[in-house]
Length: 41
Image (cartoon, rainbow, N blue to C red; front, side, top):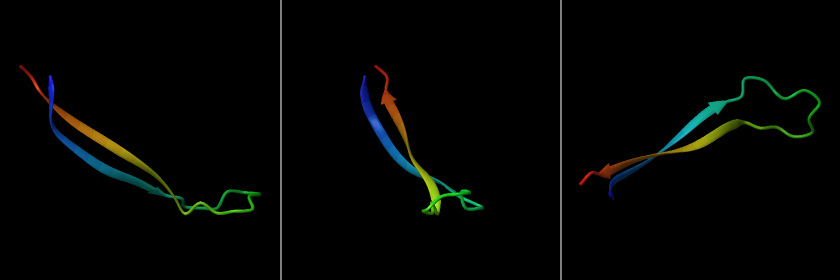
């Protein structure tokens, strides 16, 4: 099998409130999602 097409997406979830007792802030949580289409023989 060969890779026919690759797509990358960025999924972002903003935090709605600060983390209690923390000394820093995290403005968002993000993931990279990969979609791969294979060429079937």
